[in-house]
Length: 484
Image 1 (cartoon, rainbow, N blue to C red):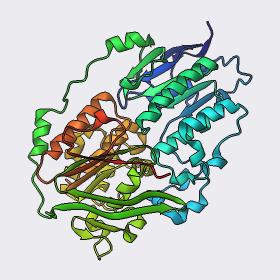
Image 2 (cartoon, helix red, strand yellow; image 1 turned 90 degrees about the vertical axis):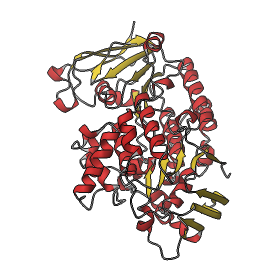
Image 3 (tube, rainbow, N blue to C red; image 1 turned 180 degrees about the vertical axis):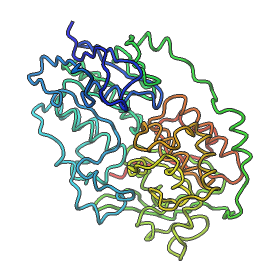
Image 4 (cartoon, rainbow, N blue to C red; image 1 turned 120 degrees about the vertical axis):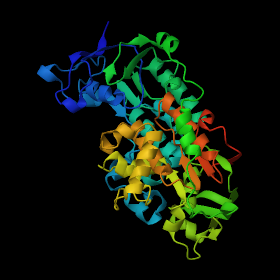
């Protein structure tokens, strides 16, 4: 049988990129693989090795057989989408809040100009229909929502006709309808072409039925390839709660600070509209969030969820032209943005994308004390103790001195979550907080959110496309529909 990728006793030359054991791996023709494992287990290291990014010792090269592809070039045949929310050509100059600053948009390309030519009109039609690409063609890339960006990246890559398509957590950030349709499309592509698919999944209950084999990776060790049915039969069951009673008690017993607002209304939006060019994102939205309420914010990709949160977090310049009150204070009445931010803990895909900071993880957490992207003011001893306290709660204290950029995306997300909690905020805003987390860490973060929200006068707004990710404490729901 043809083996499209073969690694025999593979050990990367650079020690920093090695797994604990030599890699022995064969991917046969017609096999579709899921690489699964916990956050920080080594999944991305394995993928980077099999794509040839990290050369092997002793000239022991990865062997490829891409037939019947005409090209033998790895770059032509293997396409790897990491979904690190890259904005393509504009990523080098991307900064936090750029999406909300319309005056910076003109310097960024539009979707139409970044899509490759495709001679297969049936494929192009199918992709454009699935992902709603027609509506995005003339949008500047910087204005795409996190979900729209993923749809664009998938379309761009699939139009290039790869022989092997590797996707890192392809379903996160997509609304339920698009997730289901994507699974159907990928299955159809595997049946109608030579395309072979490798999925890298932290959320291992997301494995589609067309996957034939699973490669488990944990503790920086590549396990033996098994069939999908064998893997599912051996999956451990995650308990209904994983946070220890000791940590839960520590959260519940946190002392309250003396600078709380103590207002009945946390958020008041009165007929708020947001437009970018010809497109209306929010239209005359009325919304009131009262102290102690726990809101689930949902809606299809591009419906304006993140835009709405950018208004609440004082990140969107258009908020000054809108009738908005936060903690009982009307925006534009002289209050300081930074005074408001002191009372808000926030994490989002935009924030994760902007955090390309080569700083120790504890400094990333400490930046939440001053609401900065990067650390411009060293924390005092009490601040550092608070950072270590929350990193311990999230199970990442041992990562405190590691560079943020050397952590896996799941570990980075836990660091950013600790950053959101570090100042014990009155309002907690979590925009898809469980992105990229494995099953254990997803359950742990839900436990932490639930414990935190049991405390007095804590208000929550949370966005997710997975209903099972919502904590049990949710009391209210807001569903946004897309305008045009």
